[in-house]
Length: 459
Image (cartoon, rainbow, N blue to C red; front, side):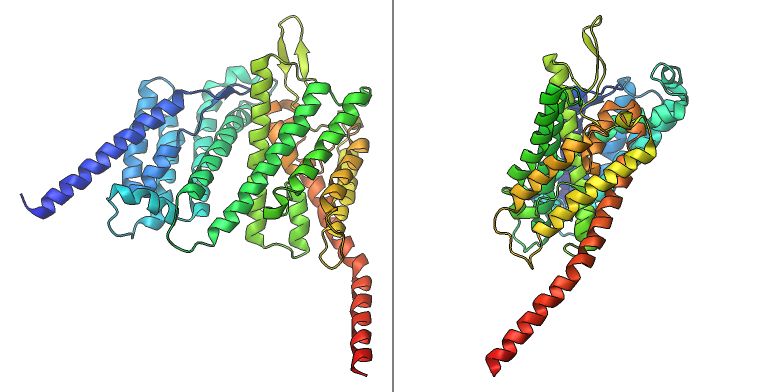
């Protein structure tokens, strides 16, 4: 047997044995249940991770093989309803995950197992996350298509007139939660694997991770407080506690992750910073994605902890006869406080976001010195807008803060979610434009005084 044949055999054995390990790990993870979604379905601890790493290490062809085998195992085990779902939901979806390794295809000595992690670390994490997002979108399409046929009888019971809409929401909710877990694991893995090359991406990922952590804490503590004590206007104690919880989180995060990312933890704030030219467009999208993932993770953990401990969600509906939650609130924003008026909801959210973001732009402006009190001022500003806004909409002023709870609460919270995305963005954009307009004259005056001082010194 020639040396070339021996080498080829060893490479094939390595591929197959590593693929078997990844298959086994993916199968085990797919059967573990982190928590049940309110609308049905379970979130698993990122069973796609082993297939992604395998695709990066050995290329998309072998990634496809492992994905296809895993899909067949799912079908044989009865976890998938049709071969059609196997094709779209799992096989094609996981194959797209395998293609995340395309950037490493030209690497030398690809079959060395000790180089697999290095190749993963050498591949752009943004590309890996991008392909993961595409893969999950493909999986969602497959699930929706099969769900229209097989879940139609459940749509009416869940309060949906259309089986298509029900299937879209039902499958999208737990797939988004699973994607949030996956993204966190991928980023953490990327950060802890050492690299011998200079990499500017790492500092960017650190900022994204900081934004994830900050938004997670905001939703977990802020919405968690609302769930625990209630935050309707008639409940004065819970009302104030909820407002304080959101504000104090901002204070705590501003003096911790603010050193890394600036502590936006709010897509609306990031948009204002983008308009003010304090961040790039690529940073903006990265911030927004990780803020949303942090919100989803925080809301998911809250739902799991409250359901596991049997604690009543004071923002939801509790069925005393059943002894369980009839519907979860999770501190989600809504329009019940404005009588269901979309226009009123948009107006209140736009104005409150304008006030909050205007404060942030002013206190963080490097041209004017505000000392180390910026974090405290911003936190108090968030308390301020909550004191008024809770009675109307529950106070969003933050699209990410609204998205996570709405996904898990479902129903009306999800239907009205667009209001709490559009209005805060509009309010933030308006604040950025107004702040630029009202500070321009003062900036010119400062520059003029500086010029006069220089002339006097020369004379």
